[in-house]
Length: 153
Image: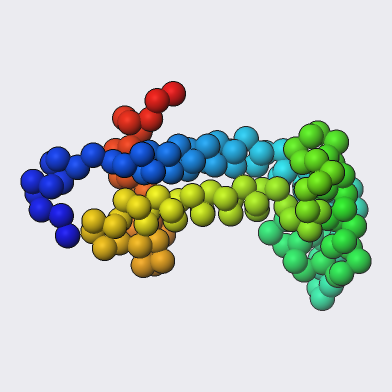
């Protein structure tokens, strides 16, 4: 644990600053691609009017796409990836089994975890110990607000 004096004299490491930059870049990436991915998903679902395998209700959003039967889900994924390639959101080498928005969110979470682990070290805080979302968010906000002054744009 850090003393008050050590806290006053604390200067972030290069790795902390670079990891904060990585978090900001991943945040931006998620925000940039999210509207396009969601629009594509919505359009494909509207076009096909896929139905849930058990209830026969029409699936209207991606959050319910897991309820599609296997064949419909394959069509859904294939069409989404084709549209994402068409607008150059992904390229031909991108793994077609993965949604680019989920990949972007996963990259963001990994960068956040790295930052939490680096910034939390003096306080014995690790990403896997921040169980509550609000604690994690607060720790990240405090860390990023502190580190932003050291980032050269």
